[in-house]
Image 1 (tube, rainbow, N blue to C red):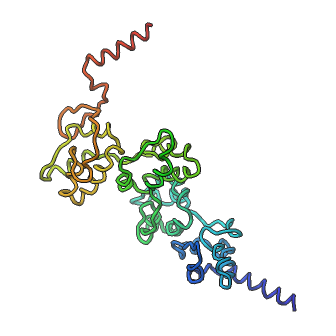
Image 2: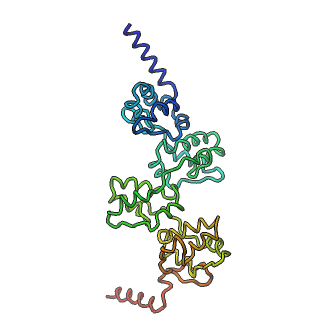
Image 3: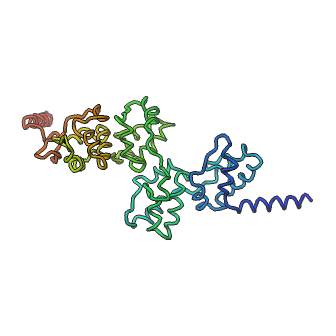
Length: 339
């Protein structure tokens, strides 16, 4: 009899392990348990993780029917032991590039590895599923897997830069550089634009001294190549020149060079908003900005205009100095050389 019961139990467990993870059962059984973690897109997760890939979770979800408090944590997306070693499929950066780069309208992940590092299998479940489907129909499914994903993955929000976390984690670090208007910066630089900074901000939680410099506005290596959006002089002229009370920049490019993305964050945000509401937002983007950007003080231009209101001359500040100043600089170099 004991052998028969053991055989029946073993067969039952095998049967359970071969069944797919039951999304409805998980929600019904576990949603009331303390610390419950939802599958953001359970059907997508199950679609790319078969019964073998989720066998431990499937088993413990079965056990949870009689002991939810103990076993639901073993069945959740970021599973507790003994299912913590059962790794769900994550987004495959190489596959995305290989499969989708030739598709019309392709959008690259600017730092795919960084995006995946802070957006796990649960966070990117829909994109992961559609990337798998793209292997046989790239034109249809690649747009669903891209950073700014199309329907049905458009509601799957990637982690963006956390302004509050940056301030609380990094403000005490030597050399700390504040975002002058962090919310405005994040409004125009999405999860893809700030992927490296987002990753290193998360790493900074356990090692602030090392990683906070990588997450700051003027980021250190390896995030120094991640360029935040700057003020677009051409967009400002084309969008705002027809608005009543329009104020041109006497040297727009020079102003941008002097202030960068951090120094013009509010104006940059409102210039983007002006594309759809110029009369409202152009005054917030102008040199003497009004409304929410009035407190954003600009540094004087680094360049000199040669004509026009957009500051098309991009010569550097040394070249823009009077001849005498340049001669003094050159003379110092000569004296030093012959010292």
